[in-house]
Amino acid sequence: MFLAAVAWIAVGTGCRQAARSPAGPPPAAEVSVTPAIQRDVPVMGEWVATLEGFLNAEIRPYVSGYVIRQDYREGGFVHKDDVLFEIDPRPFEAALDLARGQLAQAHGQLAQAQGQLAQATAQLELAQINVKRDTPLAAARAIAQSQLDSETQAEKTAEAAIATSKAAIVTAEASIQTAEAAVKTAELNLGYTEVRSLLDGIAGIAEVQIGNLVSPSTALTTVSQVDPIRAYFPITEQEYLKVTGLSSSGGGRDWMKDSSATELKLVLADGTVYAHSGKVYFTDREVDPKTATMRVVATFPNPGNMLRPGQFGRVRAVKETLRGAVLIPQRAVSEVQGRHLVAVVGPDNRVSVRNVEVGQRMDALWVVESGLRPGELVITEGTVKVADGAVVVPKAEPAPGASLPAKGI
Image (tube, rainbow, N blue to C red; front, side, top):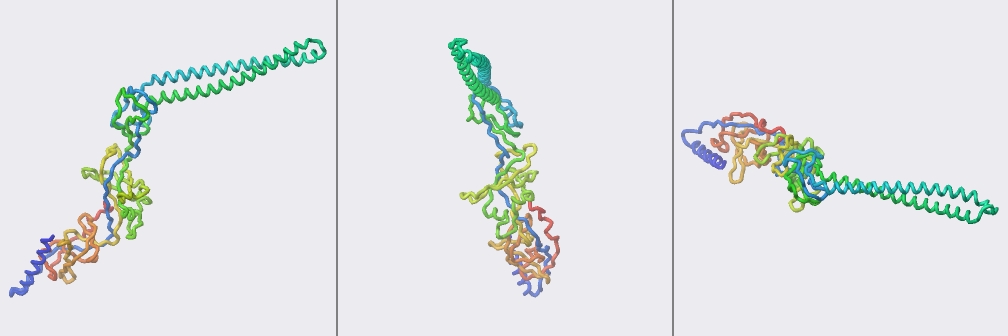
């Protein structure tokens, strides 16, 4: 582009010298021109993303013991409640048998106490009948007072036996509840010897081998739900203001309020654009003061589980829209010593070389922020043939709007 601009100057100088020569002015150069267009331009953002499972369950045992079997294929798909590992169940089977024996014993104690209560109740009823019958007889001296005293003592003994039996029943019932709880605990512990998956997903590499002693603090493996899969990527505070519509420049869209309409594309490590579009799931609660960025979480469909946790990629999305932007082809712009020059053909077919301010690039187009109005004709081919003020023969080209992406992705 620098050489092209130098050529403009050289050709312009040559033309002025030719104009002074007796041969007369050179013929007008033929150039290709296209009009500057005006339209709303979606501004793309691209961020480095890390993929993570939608859910990640670290599998740990509930009980301690020796691993005797691995029941899943590492890296394979497992369903919720599938058995992944088995721990030696024999100590837990013995504990369950003991708990069941204690429960049976407690039921036997209850039955014995209930039998003693029934016997004591019968004895009390008999003693009460005897006391009631013999009390007037003893008062009339028809029977000995000692007989009545014995019957009264028998009544008190029966009452005490009833109280003792009731206490024994309460104790036996408490023992039954304790034994039932012990049985349930033993059954749970025995069931926990089969370590099961907590969700549907991809099971990772086993962290233990058969024969290892494990405990509840031992990580056995990890199961990740990867369909859909999450993508974590950071955005700057300025970008956050734009995508939530809070920026004073306007043109943004609130990713959270309009997440379904915010189409995200994922570019994989090899440059391939992932076939399925994603959407914003949520944004973090705060801006990290160390990096001045906020983490955004997106989700992407993952049929076939092609994407895996730990992969890297780049997320693309429209972060704002430039309203009424002026666009021209990039080949119409020459850069010379930090300046951007454009050759504009006026209504009289005369060339005007202008210094313009350029902004966002959109594929083969360039946004012109100042120095050019919509509809003005810019030279796209033949700039080396002309100089400022030269008359040209313009040859129209189609407007460049067809190269703009519909959604900016």
